[in-house]
Amino acid sequence: MNDLRPTIRLGTDAASLAEAGRLLATGALVAFPTETVYGLGADATDSAAIARLYAAKGRPSFNPLIAHVPDLASAFALGDINEAARKLAEAFWPGPLTLVVPARADGAVCELARAGLSSLAIRVPADATAQAILRAASRPIAAPSANRSGHVSPTEAAHVLADLDQRIDAVVMGEATPVGVESTILACLDDRVVLLRPGAVTREAAERIIGRPIALPDSTSEASPLAPGRLASHYATRAPVRLHAKTIAPGEACLAFGPNLPPGCDPARTLNLSPTGDPVEAAANLYAMLRRLDGFSPAAIAVVEFSMIGLGEAIFDRLQRAAAPR
Ligand code: TXA
Ligand code: MG
Image 1 (cartoon, rainbow, N blue to C red):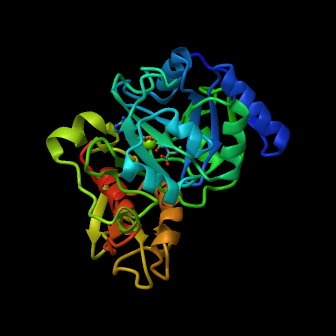
Image 2: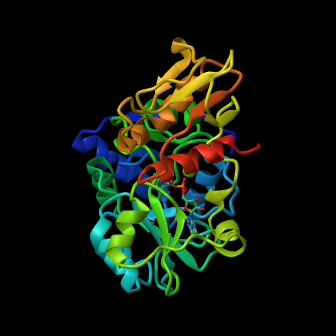
C-alpha cells in the first residue's frame, strides 16, 4: 500500500488516548509507546486492518504479530496457559514479557495476525499510555515495533515518524520509552520453556520464577519457521556494524560502553551506552544511539566489547542482528 495520507499527531491526555482506542477499534493503524519500544497498533481481530499493518511496515506476511491486552484475564481468553506460563504471567505481567502459547480455538485473534500458526504471542504491557489505549480499544491489539521492517526499532515518537509518517493513521506523541529493547519472548508450548527472543525480562529472572533452566531454540525447529524476528539481519542501520572493536579506525563511529573509550575513537562520533557500565541504562539508549551514529554516515559503527550478563544478552542479540550480512 503506497497511498499517502496525513498521520494525526495525538497527545497523551485522557481524551487523546480514548481517541486512539476508538481509531484502533475502527480498523485504523495507530502507533503508541509501550515500556519497551513504540508499537504500531491494529485491531488483531480484523484481518483487513492487519493486512494494512503488514503493508505499512513492509513486513513479510509470514511474520506473526504479538496480541496486546490490558490484563491477565484478557490474555487467558486468547491462549491455553500451562503451569509454567501461568507462573511467568503472574510474575511479569503487566510488563515486558511476551508468551507464545497454543491459540485457543475460540480466541478472537485472526489467522492473518498469527500468520497461520496454531500458536499465539501475547503480551500485557505495563506502560500507562499503552494500558489506557488497550482499555479504550477493548479488543486485542496487534503491535509490532513501529518501524519499517528490518529497520532499527523506535524508542521515540520522532523515530516512528521518520519511518512511517503518512503511511499510518495516527501516532501518540508520548515520551521516550523507558526500557528501550523489546519484550522477552518465551514459548510455553510443551513441557519446556524456550527463549525465542532475549529482552527486557532477563533469562535469569525468568528461570528463578519457573525454578528450572530455560531452553534455547534448536536452530532447525523453533528458531526459523516460528520466530522470523530471529531472521539474521534485523535492526539494520545504513552503515555496517562491527562488533568486539578494540580500536576504532579513521572514518568509523564508535558505540562505547563503560568508563574507558577505545583507542582511535573520535569524540565527535562517539556515543556511550552507559559510562558507568549499567546494562539497564545501555538498553534504554541502544536504538536512539544507533540511529544518531548512523546519521554521521560513518564507514562503520564500531561497537566495543561488553558483558553479556542480564540485559546484556538482549543488547548483544540486537547488535548481532544489526551486524549480520544484509
Ligand atoms: O516489546 C515488544 O514486544 C514490542 C512492543 C511494541 O510490544 N513488539 C514487538 O513486536 O517487538 P515485533 O512484531 O517487532 O516482534 C514480535 C516477534 C517477532 O519476532 C515474531 O516472529 C515473534 O514475535 N512471534 C510472534 N508470534 C509468534 C509465534 N506464534 N511463535 C513464535 N514467534 C512469534
Ligand atoms: Mg520488530
